[in-house]
Image (cartoon, rainbow, N blue to C red; front, side):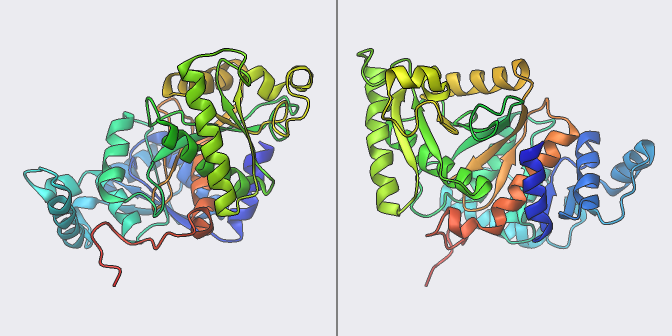
Length: 353
């Protein structure tokens, strides 16, 4: 709660517009109400206006300050359809009818963000990840100088001894099943940038493995070692103030007493606030275990490496979780150029000249 309260405080100074494609989902409506009440900006709900209003009445939730857009009736639909047809030709996407695609809320919401009709996108409470990620990856390009779109979870646990007063950034927990060395390094850099923005502190990144500095010899551990070296090199080239160490077992990354025995000279061991997992299996499993067993507040998946801020929330999220994710996405949008300093924020196919 301390973490998300600080995010809310910062966002109140620079309110943003967040589009929620699942406008007829009760948890989303409640989160949108809180988003407006806390003066975080303008929540935009997509869906049939009559259904959204009926849901609001049944929940006794005021909808003043909340925008409701029915994609099928929107004045922006023709322009969105034209843009999508252009993207489809450029990418070779085969859809029989661009209009029938664009009236789908996740596609319409992604296009809203791409064309500056909203500052961020939050979906996933009633959709599988593929239904949320596909529109984003088709419509919003990867940020310049980024080759990898990934995700991270921000988790705050009650025990303040872990991470940064209980706050940890875990990646990738939602997108890339088996990242390459190059992808692992980029995931580490993208997550470190986000941690730096949200915490205002120097990130301490642990590249996780079943081995600590050669305690086990295996190709999988060697891949983490290589990714660590590449991430350190890229951080130096980018002038990013960050400490990166690996390969590390998770206890060496988080427990000072164990770190003192294994790696007494490390700036990361025992103090890591960013945890980079070697694959999606370990990242997804660990993040859900921490959330439920340690009763942590989890905010994510926050998508990284895209040219616009977006998040794919868990279907198990409650209204508070969705609000927290929306606040993080809103805060991202304030300094997105700093997260991705080379980004021109144009659409795929746009001519920069």
